[in-house]
Length: 105
Image 1 (cartoon, rainbow, N blue to C red):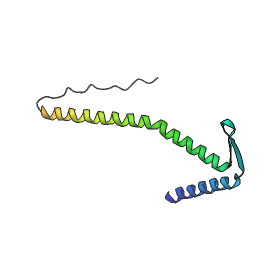
Image 2: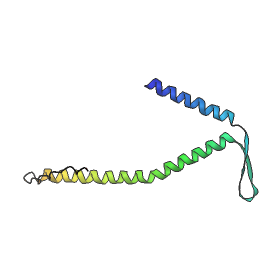
Image 3: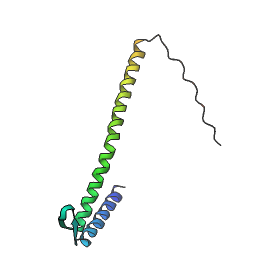
Image 4: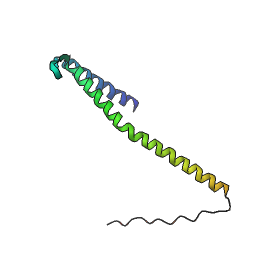
């Protein structure tokens, strides 16, 4: 399986390298106030891809932090409940109600 993954990585590298070699023409980027740049097309594509990837990672970073805070809060809550249960050994928890599977149609 490892050899197969390395084969696919190598194939992807050569495809992207060939794409870069075939698209080395200069393109003009027109900015505001009359400024312009002449850059190779492959460089423009690479910068655009990198900017999109960074934007995607940044967009998911907020939800990742929120989930980590929630996990930490739940772990503290679980630890507190276990400490309380061990502190009062004579108290037993009520049995959990039996769950029934939902009806299928």
